[in-house]
Amino acid sequence: MGNSTRPRKLAAVVGGGVALGLLVAAMPGAPAQAIATSDCPTASWVPLTEAHEIINTATVSTHPKSALSTYKGAGTNPVSDDVWNATDSNGAYTYQPPSPYIRNTTRYLQFNMSKFIASPGMPVCETSYITTSDSYTWGAMSEAINAMWPYKRSDYASPSNINAFMAGNMVTTPGPGVVKVTANYKAQDMEFWANENGVAPGTPGAVPITRFFVKDRWGNEYVMHASAQTTPSTVQTAFNNAVLPHGWKKSARTMKKNLFLHPAEGSDGSFHYLVFRDSQDNTYHQIKWGNRGALQAQIPETGMPIWGGNDANVLRGNNRSNVMHGAGGADTLIPMKGDDEVWGDQGFDTVVLNGKASAWKLVALSRASKTLVIRNGKGETKTLKFVERLRLSNRSMRVTSLYRLGGRAVGQSL
Ligand SMILES: [Ca+2]
Ligand SMILES: [Ca+2]
Image (cartoon, rainbow, N blue to C red; front, side, top):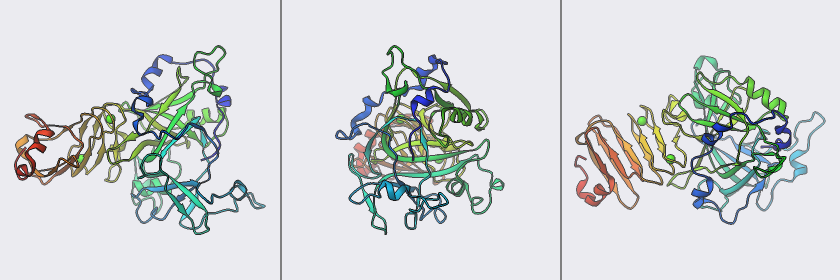
């Protein structure tokens, strides 16, 4: 990550507000404050500063479906600005982290403020640290699973022709009509100002910032959070030139209010953002969920989790084995075929299953861990966690009624 593109410059790209009416729909249904229970109360919003980031590449080629961990200089012995920025006579950085770490590429950020919540897998407010073999210390920031979509093997050279995940790890910028889909486990809040310099909306003379939005063919919406470009005009050009998958739409528009993003929260303690990268190296965060399909469910292999947002969603899996998270809100989760692990997470969540109740037998259940395991005659297993209701073709049932039966219910049909 690098310096932010100044909003003052961005505002110069396009003047007046376009399609303000659509803006309401673009804002998350529930403001971040409404679901801020997992924010770190002692952390504060901070303006973006240049971070010194490294990525652990140990599993990139051996286990391409594994998440890649990113760290930033922090802790008792962080790398200094002087060391990090030093270059040789050719302009190349002289500091390179020891293997298996590499420097993260510089990105020009389009959002303005951030608030740290936790390192991946850590309790709220807590950071975990590593020490590289050159004795520098780093704080754990995120874990990311990458895959290209749509993925056509013949478009890639070895080793990216192995699968969509390998291509996602090895190829930085997707080709025209392709996006790189990232499950980004990053526990931070983000704020995008409506006006340059963060001037409060409604202030006379406020200059709105043009923001770049994408809507996919399933009704999911995304906002650009970073670009490889450094100036407002080149960012706008890169957005205009990006070739998105068939049926996706772009819009550049201003906002009536500042936009706050809070990551989706799983009941396993994870925090998630869906991020994608376009053919011009712009990257976007998902801000709105359509009910006709999930981008992550399009990856034609197992290994990409499928996440909802913090509002009520209709979330569809695919006919492979999926890990699904509804996150906050009263979600409807449709895992389809396969051995699926379905997390309802917070809210009153419903899982829709194929077949009648009599087709499914209880394999295990635990009220304490809010887990229910069921299997049908085809041998498909569904592991359901923090789910409140099952909907079958002939009836619906509350999961609490199954928990009440306890171990006696194991082996019985639903
Ligand atoms: Ca499935
Ligand atoms: Ca949800």
